[in-house]
Length: 103
Length: 353
Image (cartoon, rainbow over all chains, first blue to last red; front, side, top):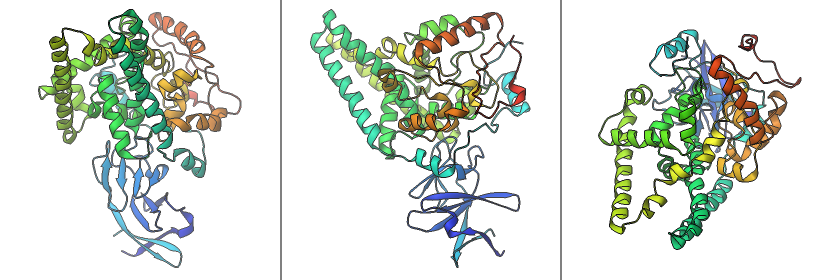
């Protein structure tokens, strides 16, 4: 599957997250404190809340509804009430654009 | 038809069918940059408050034991009791959200201590409280509705000395320690988490057993005055403040401005309650730490009903509504929004009973 051009790198602040919708699916794109980009499914695995409204702390994303946490680099569920891991997607940065591999 | 608050009853099924369960809720508009700044975690305020809380508790405990059994020790026990039996409620709550401290082990440590003091299994109640935030005051879905309709007056009155809730907590602790969960617990706690419920209950039983043995060995009730009983004689403050959170307001709505109440409180009560008096704001944005809730209140206040100016004023608003609910259980207070606020959705403007 071709890479999807999701956004410009400057669209996301350091240590922050942005929602990206594509093909009827919602994704969350993260910019880590060390300026790396990551992508996961956009909805919390607990109760389908958009993670883009949450808080990025280091390499964790905290859900805005129940404060469950995931490591957005691996998708691992780190703190209850989330128990099911998030799906992650490979991200490439080229020419100031964030490209995600949804394959 | 009377409301059925059981999590496994007909109202629970109706809430799912009607889309009230796990619904999208109203939020005031706050730009992302501002919200991110409000959500930012720090350790400083909670470390300060925790040192103050446990420091004062230790002083009161020390003086209480030193002056025991003289009545002169009573004020120290009363203060200790409120910090044990009421401040633990707000610490349990805030640390359960993980918002008090930035450092996770600090949240977890205070959460475990507070859960023990307030007699709420830290695993069970994490899930219970998650449901309370998903389905706030949705009948049949929210397991934490303190004032059902019509109000159970005797139960509420007895809770001022902690009796029904603490006894239920201790009964549940013994059930869990025997290796079992109540059916309602099993309905919202994932199987993978259930062994943790049992492990914690067994640790608590061991602590209480040691306390009771110490009381028997010393021939004094003093160990129980220090551990366990403060949950009863110190409960009044958290009941007084907690009833105001949703009492007399709407149920089965998806706008926290309709079912939650913000009350401005004196500094001592705000410290004990850890700013949970900003309750509309907390429910709307549960990621904002307790020490930033006054800032959030200032930020979105023009979109909320006016805050009650004091605990007394809030009771003056709530009590007539509760009394009316004895005769008309559908009655609720519809609070007026300021002209700057976005209106409630039309279907919530129900005529008064």
